[in-house]
Image (cartoon, rainbow, N blue to C red; front, side, top):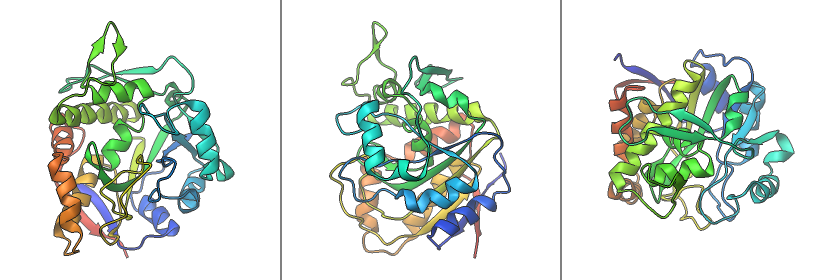
Length: 294
């Protein structure tokens, strides 16, 4: 596989997000789903809708999300819609909770490491292409959260999230949330699930990672630790594997005093294994050319 192109700017503005999408040379066709993280109630680090607004409007996109599988303010359609309103998303955008309607869309996992299928919000079928806008940060389950997590956990329905976390475990066809897989199996299940979204949209998908507000905790945490590192910038690519790898490499290369604390979270949960597994599955590469954008 040839090296992927990953673009990088240190500028972190709404205008820079658009610029980093445009340098990809990919015009997303038709009805565009824009995957964001709406932020758990109480979280202080998620990227606000005002920051995302120019990019969403530039592609005439619809913001999409799915419900969670854990207790909180986003684990039901009714509560999630209320929080989306509270967080200001519905002030600017039409927001589609893709798993509000049932049944889920079941996507096959071809030659997966763990999963045989992935359960995603069925409304994903209403879109022709997808723009994945990810806040790159730490994560208390996956070690880190970036483009691959947005594809995997982010596009999965509540039941699909449970399936990933459990490593595909089911009991009489009922997904059991409290049956947690081993850490490496969970990472591999995320890689499997992410690959189904890439395969679903084929060449009609693009990725932008905002490497800022670098907390060890995810935007899904109601009580999140404050950022421990300075912001790094915005990266974009048509390859989600190369993109997440490049973000991790920039953190490893940083001389920020908070770097070791951030990396302790990633390494303690073997977060890099999601990237390793995704590369082995073949829908992306860890080899890339980093291209600076002024």
